[in-house]
Image (cartoon, rainbow, N blue to C red; front, side, top):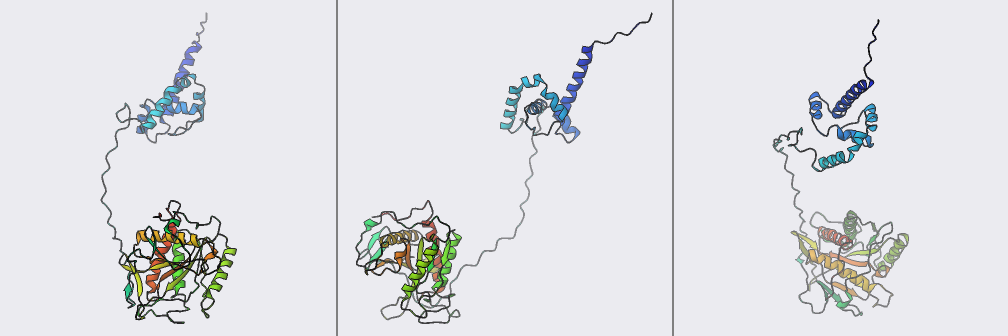
Length: 405
């Protein structure tokens, strides 16, 4: 009689297969991101090495330690046991992320990193200091003009105003506001021009220019047009676009210069509606009782800066000028800003009957950049300081105007 071998129960085979598959899945999942045998062995000892990547794969996430093989991910997706521990594993992941990974004192955790030995500093060549700025002496007597008392002036904050016009005003008009503002339209915001563009300075020996008159030259490298260049450059560096008219409206004929510069300003504004400020740059002519010229200066960081003054026109001469009070309030605000940093840089504001073409804008000023006795270097320094102050006044956070007394 032939005996047949009894087959093994099917459930034993299934258990064996499941255990083998589970072991493979565990080893593959736990060591997927390891790049060496020692790293793989260490990864097998971590308590969360299997659970976290298995669950993240089931949820469709990306395991930061690497990507599970497709077969393994499919097997995990069919495992209700793993899914049942979802909350616990997510809490473990959250804890590790908050702590920056497993603590060194946890079982199976990585050992603390060895201290890094400090490295010796690298010797570098010391930076070469820029040579100090020095202005050549032009030999003209220097004075600093400041009011001796408030008598004869309207005073607001630290600003002195000399009223030489027929118009009356008091310090109460300086209420902390002014109409001048930079346009939001595309295009130049500031127009710089020169009604008397040939006005020039007294140059040091060796830097003379070809004159076209008394302290005048048509060479724009030496007259007030050069000062306008410096002002324009400073404003552009502050992000304020400028249109600089370099025409000489006082040459070859001096008479009628204001009429010619007015036509040019109106044409520029019509062509560029974005223009908000109109600055007419001049230089003064000052002499003592004996007729000898002198220069007006303010000490700025050891250098002579040319003292400046604002001339404000009105309708006192009979010409229409609706903006004169706004021009004055703007000038006072700008002057206060300059005086806060440079207490002697500004001479008193002068208000006069002539309107000086300032009817074209509520932000129009005539600026005297020093006097004929000043050197060009001194005027250029003041142009930079004026440009910086203008940019600061129109900063959104700036307190524009001085407080009224």
